[in-house]
Structures are given as structure tokens and as C-alpha cells.
Length: 183
Ligand code: SF4
Image (cartoon, rainbow, N blue to C red; front, side):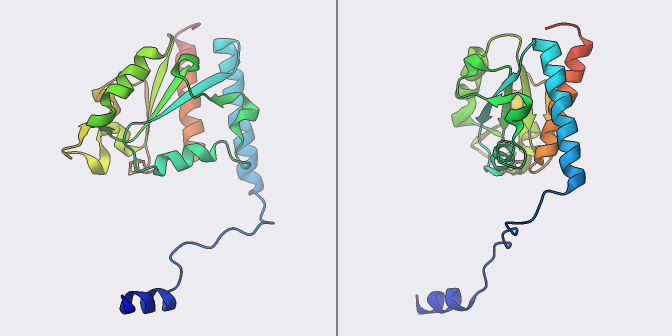
């Protein structure tokens, strides 16, 4: 116990330093974000005649992917200004954004959420684990990737994917959907 106390007293913090409060978002990145967000908003309005609603489902993730999804709603990304909303109920959702490998405990919840989402609906598997179980593949607690349980329309790779990659993925989904004709 004494060793542990001494170690923690003389160890440096393992976290990275917080960004300075006066540090602005890089101008280039902000412009790309605005362009991406506007493109998504325009495409969604053409497809649905309104904004889009996403229901996020954590099917067994380590929560790294969730941190990036949460960032979409922070003061930097603030995607609601582009008409992208997150809903608590699948009954209000157009897109199911599923993270993590699907664990055996979450399999039924994922199936029931998919069944409760009205058509037309799209499933986006987010992160490397959502593809095939990722680093959790083979675990006794894991069924597999998202497509092992529900049909997947798009996979966004990364561990975890950054917010901009999530927005690019959603845009690619809507572009592909637009080519198929009106919803
Ligand atoms: S892809 Fe990476 S961050 Fe996302 S759930 Fe898997 S291990 Fe966690």
C-alpha cells in the first residue's frame, strides 16, 4: 500500500494536457465541416423533405466510438445546426447508428430496435468492431459484427472513426440512396 501511495505521489499524469481555452478550431477544418454539414442537410431535405434523425445503439462497444458520436453534438461540431438530430426512440429514427461488436446480451435489444424502426430505415455499422467484432472477435460473449444480426447499409471503419469520418459516411449513404430514387 505504501509503495502504491508513493508511486502515485511521484508519478506524472498519464492524460494529455487539455487544449487551451482560447485555442480556435483550425480555419480549414471548420470550413470543411460546414461544407459537409450543408451537403448532408441538402441531401436529407431532398430525400425526406426534412431533417434526419439518428438512433444510436451501443451493441457492446468499449465506448470509444460513443465519445466520437457525442463529439458530433458538442460546441465544435454542433451537427444539429445541419438538421442532424439524435433521438431516444427508434420510432423516430431514419438511421440506426450501431457501435461495437454485438454481444450476446445485446443481440435481442438490437433486433427489437431494428424491428421498432419504421421503414425506410438504414443501418450504419460504426467502427472496426461493428464490422466483424474487431478486437473482441472470438470472445464467448460476442455474436459478431452488426451484419450478423441486422442488415447493414454502410460500414464506417476506424477505431474509433473521427466525427468528420462519421459525417462523410452519412453523406456517402445518402448519396447512394439518392441514386436509387425517392424514399
Ligand atoms: S472500434 Fe475501437 S473504439 Fe470502437 S468499440 Fe471497437 S475498440 Fe472501441
